[in-house]
Length: 327
Image 1: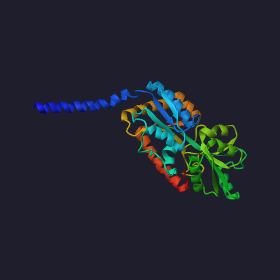
Image 2: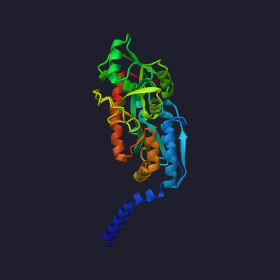
Image 3: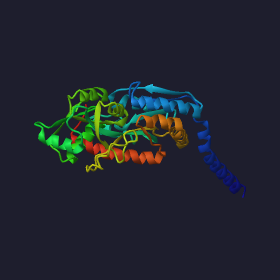
């Protein structure tokens, strides 16, 4: 009887310890400063998002929150930085669609698996893409663009932010779905030089996020033909979607998300998710982002994990179809 009682008491104690482990870890986290590792240089969209959220996290978590810029190699340098740190939630990878869903297929050799090497925390922000043409273009509608692609000798040139970028892949998808003539890809190193040549008339069209194009559209430097997203953009409410205009299946948003190293305790992931969701729902952050054409999209870790897998399936297929690759 005594042996049975000791066994029972021991089992109960072990069960109690399991019950309190989760809350204890959650209460202990974070125990030191938190670092948001960003795979782009300072000043870019991802960096701006991270810095806005860092300020909110610092208030909520009551720990210093640092933004660490580690650009290069399609996100591999930043990802490796996170992978070399302990799996305790204090180092967070904040990146965009390319790092999570495009580059693992685009690069012939890639050093991380976004699903196996990382634990989802939450999606953060999305920005729909808009189809734009130069101010001086004779084209003023999607129908006219398709007609011009058939009529113009040699077809039309579409710019992108780089080989394998969302703008490139969406352009290829549009070419296959538009029923138009010839569209030829011209790759640039980022949005800025591509938009500069677009405004100068060196290229004919481009798909680019609303956050970068809206000010140029509103100032009359570019003409918006359609939103490449399931619904219209709040910043450009008068611009119809491609689906509204009769071209289905050509929609995409650039999105940004946060992940931590695989093996991070669930309570730490939950605390980060809670804090980031709180930041993304705060009125000042919502206004700041929506004014820029960005849409907050907090999710549970589970929902974000499912979303990432769906996006990987979608974009990897487009990368393979396009034939794009990077050494």
